[in-house]
Image 1 (cartoon, rainbow, N blue to C red):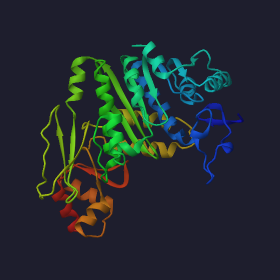
Image 2: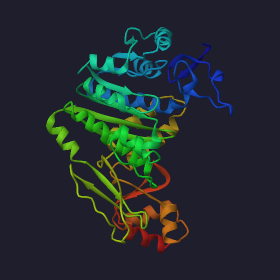
Image 3: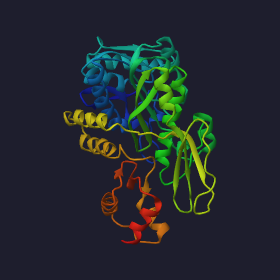
Image 4: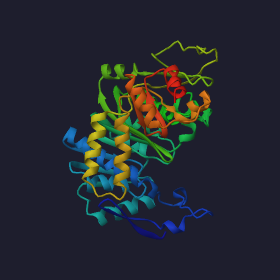
Length: 388
């Protein structure tokens, strides 16, 4: 296998030669490589480094695990770029990946902090029950097969970071696949990405509950082709019970755009909207906040001290997440509301200003450039659009 040098942050890596694994259209295809590496995920990994540093600020030090490592980029970056990492276990079951991880450990001189492992990810995690306090589950596809073992290997408290690249089922394009993998009904609405993130969050929480582990999202974002969650983990049945109270369903009306959130273990879902249309339902899913403002702001502060290539974009993304942190579930699309009201779409900043003037919560959302979050009713929103 031909390789080339790649640089991310302060880390140098030998990776598969990108020009050797391209589709007919010319784009690099990570799934074609014998050792997985996706340069398009550099932004995600930059944010992960900043998030890990913010966790160190809370815990003092972290013992981390990268169980699906590929070339080892995430684990090695934690070892080299995060102050306060006591150990990182970097694992991949591929012999070729394992050899490349060993090479990259030497290349970055982090052998005293990072430990290479060759084996099945689930077997590694089950063998280390209660050991880690920072686990990064970053598979190619769905994280579902790894979450039970990841929760088992989590200590008394820490961080579980999750990536999902199988966003189509979570967003409603594959209903049966979503039911199989996540035990939830998706819904293809204008805010389907947020529904997908909430379904993934709820699934992870239910998996964690079996281990008396509470998972609370403190930073979540949907970017490009993937969802990324950072969840604070803490042992305790009381905490688990409190977390699960915030699981429920979102009911949506495709005629007027109304949406209703209903929580509870066996909720009685509304069948018909007040406009007379039958409601469609998504869930079970997490109905609580997807972001803790304080943590998102700490991640932004960490990014401000880094010289990452994409740092302006990264700060903008996390700052937008912080802005919408206190908003309710779901958001509205300016163009979709305008279509229903048969009006020209107003400027989103004017819509938000009017909502705030009316005493409502209102903010932009990172899920969509033309989306806004608010606790106003659909009737209040419609009136703002009608009045121009």
